[in-house]
Length: 345
Image 1: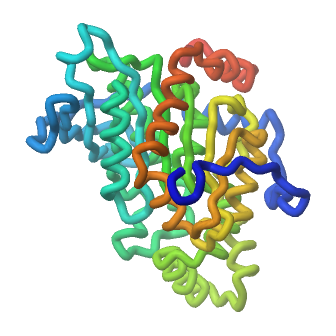
Image 2 (image 1 turned 180 degrees about the vertical axis):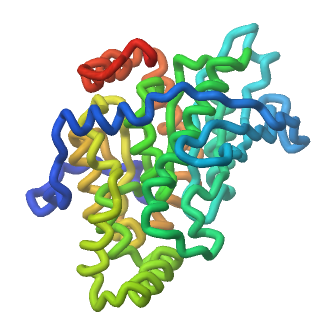
């Protein structure tokens, strides 16, 4: 990286132990199985945006899809960055699904999407507020699990679209997530073997610990309101309460994902997604290639995505993975052994 020297790779030290106990292989298979339902979706809108270029077409692409356990369907609000088909000679392109940080899509997300597009990779930015926290709400505690369900439903619709759309290759799909998008995305990737690769920036595992310790403004507001409502006197009490209610965590399913299919960026001075929780997730993934920055949470995201040379390194990771056979499909069969696989594969 310019200014910092692109992505310093370091070895984990003994001080970074996993804060969350691993779950059994059987439990991993059971959780993955919950998300192997057949997806139905429809395109609500696919309108060409005038902000595109001769190299990259931009579409407002909104989908409606299943939302398991909920009475209403899920509306997926997104933007598709598509390499101009006139450049492709009839070939299809891979697609990376992008999940922005809390606060929604920003200039850096758009730059990353344009870089993917320039490198002949379609990018679909999902713009939903899956947690509802950004709207100033304080959701009930069981909504944390539902946020994962919503994210996975949106991802599954995106994968189905990539399979069906004439210009994209549904067998070459990746997932890119930043901060909250990385937390939701890393878990979602783990449930969907069609996702061949994932790149996550300042994402972490052990969600109860993150929610108890984060100094991010919205997370802090929700924590303070809940602690007052429940009569908790300490963050430790709040964290223990969360552990009773939260059933899904990116750390739990990470062992099901081949280490080489993941890369991460970790901030060494992060209090939004505490550094230790980022390192926890890195360890749960089997210590894939990780790039550490001395900047804080926001500074790390800016340092990574502002510079084109860094964005090209990210796109090159996906391009390399897309040249290889996706090992996750066969591994998913093994994790799901004992379940009815015929309807999934």
